[in-house]
Amino acid sequence: MSLASALIIGDEILTGKVQDENSVVLARMLFERGVRLSRIETISDDIETIATSVKYLSNHFDYVFTSGGIGPTHDDKTYEAIAKAFHLKMGYHEKVLEKFAEYHQLFLSGKPLNEARQKMAFLPMPCEIIQTEGLWLPLVVVKNVYILPGIPSLFEKLVNGIKHRFDGPAIERILIYTLNSEGDIAADLERIQNAFPKVAIGSYPKTSDAYKVMISLEGTDHQAVQEAAHQVEVAICGFRTFERI
Image (cartoon, rainbow, N blue to C red; front, side):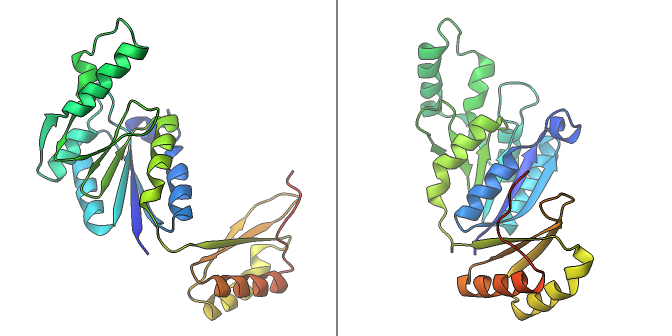
């Protein structure tokens, strides 16, 4: 199974001004496409920090997805940092500039394509440009690094536009709920986990009237997931559906 990592870039995330929404969107897409998201890092808007993290993740994962730092302002440093990570030159991408000019003519009449806006077309070279229907902003790919914006609405559209590129083994997930506490079910879960080592079994407590613990079972061996789920359900007096309140 292919492994992916996410690099969330932005001082606004680290200081609590903005909450990260993009890693959840990415995780769901990759899960559906059979790619395991194995690491999520959050770092500051610093070129050296970004470059170091990108280089490490690129060397250790099949795919890297960055979020943030590609706008027109002085603190948007992701493109420059990724160029530094791979010892690439920066240059204006003519097709991206043309796309920006078209967008400005159609939707931002009277506003010039000034130097700040052109900065968003100053990219590591070489790179791959992926255009998404209806969007002016391209998705830039350098080696195995997918460079995405931090704006959640744009991030989600761009991610959904490339999901066809990823096609790993389908992962089955079954959720089971119980009114028992984790302490009551821990021994049974450990026993079943040992019997099904290829099934990932996770326990997630929640204090509510509907259930006390949610058990997640995941794996690519669908028969094993089904059998393990059945054993868990019986052992912990579990149920698969409940009325959400």
